Image 1 (cartoon, one colour):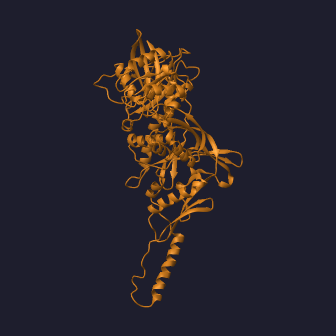
Image 2 (spheres, helix red, strand yellow):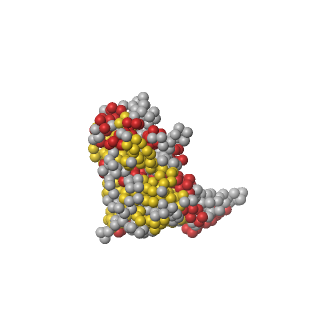
Image 3 (cartoon, one colour):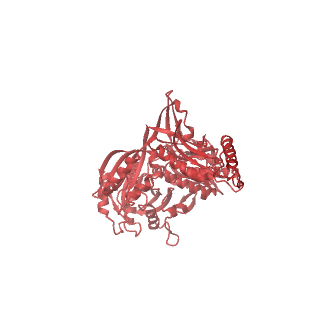
Length: 600
């Protein structure tokens, strides 16, 4: 039996999951009674949002030219924030189906995924999907693919995943055009861990691709990265339903259970080998993902004000999620305002949003999320550099030579009538125009360089709004660049509140500070004395809001008599307020921090 390992890659919402459903149906892996839409999207979150978050591997049979084939395919996410998930899937494959919507054409992530596949030396088959739509232009889209990606028009396969048109031709092309997996380089067992998740009854379930040797039930295995040994208790494949097998051969993919209860014992990208017949060297594994967006997660306070139990629940939920999604990091963080929590790193904003929702659903814990920030490189006067993820960690300004922020290369594909508005948007966000390419008669590609901090808030929403949903973007980090950046300290009654400090460009400092102070003024309760809310850069105050004192009518009991009686009472009240302002402390409620820190 011949084997074909391939991935399905595309821009978000171009029909990958529907195509995967149709391939399962056509190969008789599922019948009409058991089939449902988005078969491979196992999470409720994926179904609700209509996006793929986790790559899912499936094994199905097919016959072509009188020969039997085993097709192992992976449906991958399409959003830019899950590129790491896509790159991991491509490492386990020899080919990829590049799916393009016949109505929308080549989009930003289509280009990014195609380059990712080429870097991994994968054979590509371009697939033009949704040819049944009234607005479909398959021939024009095939020309676009040739123009932008250099894949010949004749290689394109026109399909409709919805009606099933062209699916048989596609399956035959997969068998004919994708190469055989490479022969094993050693007779010793080497299997790559490309995914894992935690099961309450069986422990850690590992998804693996065997490159050399074979994996059998009862074998004693060793993880080459962690050095831990286990005995294989269960093996299986997804067809798409889990099916137990006794053996996984060379170049096959499947899942493995070995009664692993400790989450830290499994690392994605590790190599599995035999304990008594060790391989000389591990498989290449994966590049560590670079987290670019950071924010804090704190457990929401319970009714009795205690957080300890919630903190442990949050830690457990994060460890389980990290096993399933190795691209986010977390470390313990303490805030005077919100207590103990975690500083988390993400690949992007959607990634952060998905992780928060998965922690709340799968871990059963409510979290308070702070506003996202990016990492900065600080060049010190002694010649050294430090990387910080939190403005509160900024060294003393007297020791700083320069603050460098991450810069991204941004590629926008948009209708030509929106080019002017998008250029204004990028210009307002400190963008540098790099170039413009002609894609078709109605669409063009714009290249910009922008600071990452300027696009993590609402840039994507504004892009979609300007282009009425037709604009798409893709970005990659190119390095760090110094700029006129400064740390803004927020002070309440003269005392700095580190949880609210931020780093931003001096040109935007006053506007950002004013927004925070106005929010804070609405949330803090009024006291018996006036409270000054200030924003400062170093020793210079750049914005101020005042919280007026509560007035008590001390002259209410004076009825008649000389005016000096009232004046005496008012002077006494004034002196008391002055003394109170000197020694009194301002109580900042948790809701005030949440209102300021929460992402707008």
